[in-house]
Image (cartoon, rainbow, N blue to C red; front, side, top):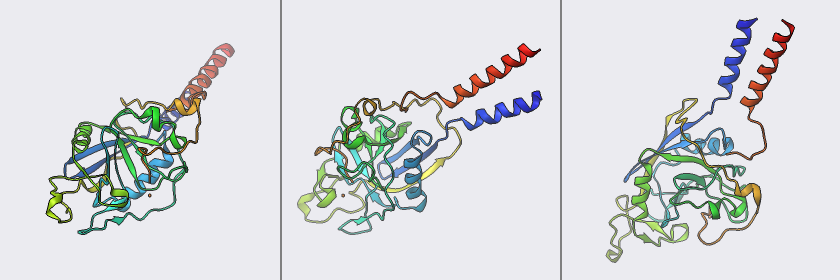
Length: 262
């Protein structure tokens, strides 16, 4: 009986471990590692990984830079000439505004006034944008955090000059580009993402990370629209008892009753 109980406890504890995935955004300016929050935002992570595993992010560019705010990608590919090709997208994913848009987090872009419209485009928060993005458009879904020295690369991109390439790439950061030459930018000028790949799919990765919950959305679940600087595409909700806590309480009650009977 004791062996069965111990096996049950170990299996139950294993089921409550935080699942996570680490991906590497490989760019011509350096690589950015990101720890995804599979448990807090499962639908969004699954959606993102579908694009990753299909190779959809190969040869995409950072098509938008808002200095001190965000860098945005996932929507357009450079295949040797302009105009840029759009990344084929699937069905949109449901909004999961559980976590806060603080510096170093990665979140999904979406259509203005449509909370559940995110597809392939994502952005990295260059600053603490929680006061804006945790509420706008029912909150922007944070689904990961940049780790290691990844923000050094993001900050370098933040320093690049921007150019209007038309459409959604009206504020594209470019490297060593001479607009006076009259030539179109090429692969040496774009912040090019050669690929995004999974580098660690262990059950638990970076357990020391403590993502900041989005408390603003709980206090004011505003559906508000976007403002001009909001990323556009075209953890805990509180109050619930942690399942692990419930398990410990249940086991404690069981042991207490067994002791009484003895």
